[in-house]
Length: 129
Image (cartoon, rainbow, N blue to C red; front, side, top):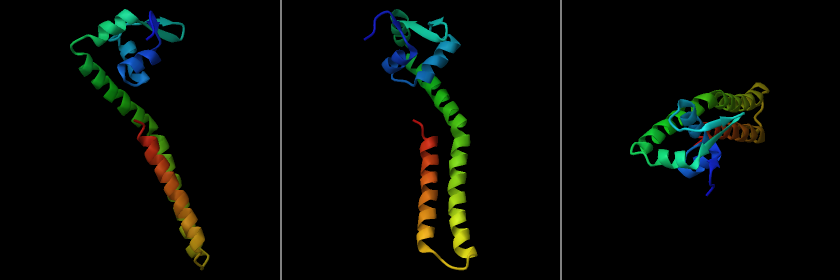
């Protein structure tokens, strides 16, 4: 354990939350810390005091849910982009197969496989936690 001042990353690890949650708590003033240039430092005593509060788990759980919801909302354009690419690849594979007047099974398989990879990437992009 670190003694003295902790980085938000260390505090997040100790609190078992996302580092973004620690930053949100610091910004709201619920967790006290000192801002030095572009970084935060949290004293060991303040972290222990915050974690010892009776409503600690409720505060942290609520803030963690808000942070995760915001991260998912911010990642939505990426999800839509990956899903759109998946549909485009599958659509192009179908187009080239049927518009050219002949069916190419390997082309169909490859286009569906690549399309599914994009859909899987969209799913993974959305499920960040």
